[in-house]
Image (tube, rainbow, N blue to C red):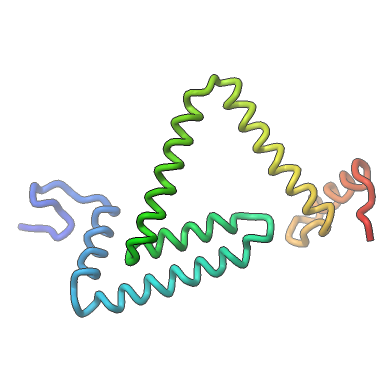
Length: 154
């Protein structure tokens, strides 16, 4: 008996392989191809616009933009080339970092963490403690800033 989720050789396919096969069927079927392309274009556009709106704020704005381009890479060859180029540069950077001695890798990670912590501290110092923090944490953060940093300019 043939199972639709099994390879011709009889091995069970992974979820990723089944999803890839389904996307291929949607792309190649003339009845669903136009709808599939439309959904991908609109979804990619929404993700890119949200990312561009978030770029000036602290957080993953550019990462969200690149996720939108990765979504577009399903239907646009230029987006696929851009995505592949980004992955290639990321792999090259990762290979370069792994050639560095452990001390320099640790120092780079520590400096990155320090930069993120500084950015968050400046954000909280400038805009105030976020309301979504639990009251216990909110009071501790306010007390820390009152003790260690000057008052924010008005």
